[in-house]
Amino acid sequence: MELDLEDFYKRGLWVTKRTGDFGAKKKYALINEKGRIKIRGFETVRRDWCNLARKTQNHILKLILTTGNEKQALEYIKEIVKKIKNREIDKKDLIIRTQLKKPLDEYKAITPHVIAARKIKEKNLPVDIGMLIEYFIAETREKKALVRDKVKLPNEKGEYNIKYYLERQILPAVENIFQVFDINLKEVIEGKKQKKLGDF
Image 1 (cartoon, rainbow, N blue to C red):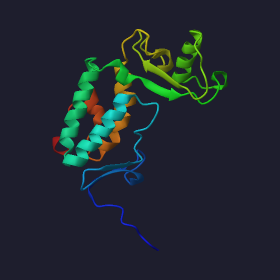
Image 2 (cartoon, rainbow, N blue to C red):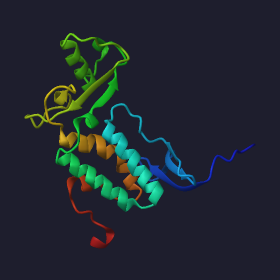
Image 3 (tube, helix red, strand yellow):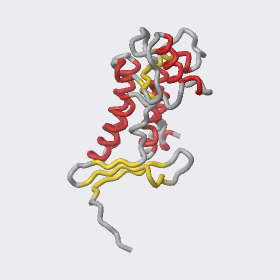
Image 4 (spheres, one colour):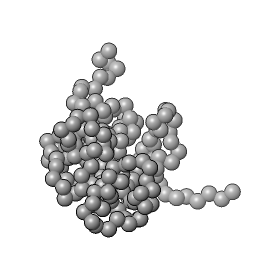
């Protein structure tokens, strides 16, 4: 059996699965001696994530790999959370793009991108298989409204939904990275003080 030497990596991050404490084989990020980063298994290309979620995940990985210090990464995520809560994020960074994979009337599940596609069709604009449907999740007066009831097209008026973007976009993008350092990001997002073992 022949083995090829791929590279020398000075630092790496192996992320555990949500279901257990064992490292996921294909979920890791490495940085080589030249500063080049290799990422495997992270959902940086997920289409149902907005640009901000992708950029945040990439930046957090880069910070941790280059500095070896999770504290800078934690400060960065706190800043992102603060900006979302203060509505300082440009709406264009929160647009979600999802591909339409079949004709609109064949969708049984009414997902956000199906709602957005229907809205486009109502404006007598073409909706075709393979096209990227763009939308954002907005605030509604109805607190118990479903996500699909909060869908708006990019040019529609409305404020982005703070809770949705924190809990369904930013948190899933980076929480398992911070779990490696025993940091509960949900508490950070909710603004609660994290308890350490010494606090009990």
